Image (cartoon, rainbow, N blue to C red):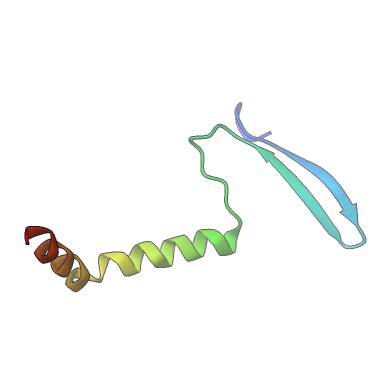
Length: 62
């Protein structure tokens, strides 16, 4: 258990690999590290692309 709301359990063991199960409230994001890092990169990239936002605004004004 992590706190009162998050439960982690081992659901499968195969050789040197394990599978984990995670139960958490819907408002708590649960992602693998590589997915979390991808989300962070995409969020950062979206803040650095003002040209795309400006183009969208100009299209919406037409």
